[in-house]
Image 1 (spheres, one colour):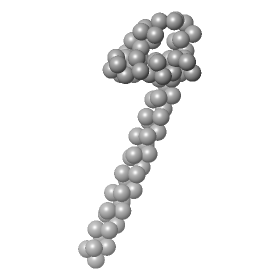
Image 2: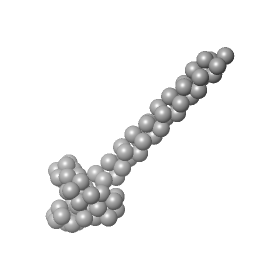
Image 3: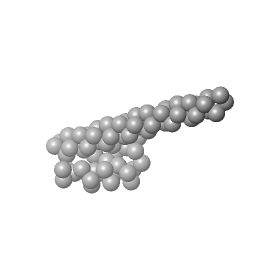
Image 4: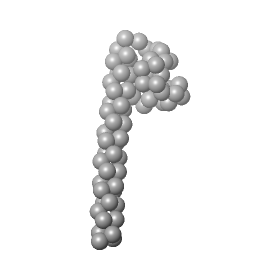
Amino acid sequence: MVTLFNQEHVTEIHEYNLVKDARNEGQQEGLEKGIRATVLTLKEFTADKAAVAQKLVKQFELLPQTAEEKVAQYWES
C-alpha cells in the first residue's frame, strides 16, 4: 500500500514538473517573439543598433551584452 502511494506521488510530481517545464518553455518563446518584434519595430524608426539594444535592456531587463546579441540576431530578419 505504501509503495502504491509513493508511486502515485512520484507520478504526480513528475506530471507537475512536465507542466511547469512546458509553461516555462512557452514563456521563453513568447519573450523571444516580443524581443524580435521590438527590434524590428524600432529598426523602422532608427538605424542606431546601440539605441535599440538600450531599449531592450530597459524593456526586457536584459544584460547589455545579451541585448546587443539579440539586436544582431534579429536586425536582418
